[in-house]
Image (cartoon, rainbow, N blue to C red; front, side, top):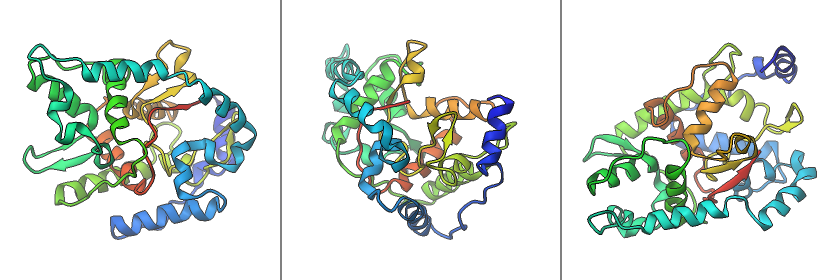
Length: 285
């Protein structure tokens, strides 16, 4: 970001916006968060937020181009590769499906989650690697794109069209949720901006000709195929890759994928998306 962009952000009120009223429980947080967007964009129903910025009225002049792209999605090869990897047997003859209840069908709507047996938070990517190790394979090191992103697509598509329903049914999950909430609303970096500054208070406003997406629905379409990432020939990315990019944009040091902070942020966003369908993968700018 340059000086001109910083002035644009300030002009939109991003640097001085106030957060939503603090709420006492996740349930009241959810009601307030979703209610804010339904009031801000009254013509956009809750279910439409699965399409990200494409659902906003401020993006109406570009939706036609997006729809044309969706006739022949650029991520079709990644879907096929992910399904191929998912079904490919390990050296012991088992597949990824063997690691998940019901072969993984319908499970993505509940991620991330805290498991009392393992005493840790679980993300899809971490569980994919755990499955590999359990079956005598080496874990995938690159957690941002490549095979991990393709496998995540395969797993999430087993819940395609089902609605997010993350559970906060333990003290540990609630504590992680609160950390994610704090991360989402806290300002950081040299630009002193939070996730909410752009994606709540200024959702729908324009920056450099781009429309700022709404925080509601973010995450339901990951992994995503981004036009920006395609310039480096790595167009597909996981949600933690996107978190790192956001940190860089506000001139804050990005954290490692699967870090505790990013996992907490993912949990907070997943809970805020309760009732919105998974639509993976998706294409974004």
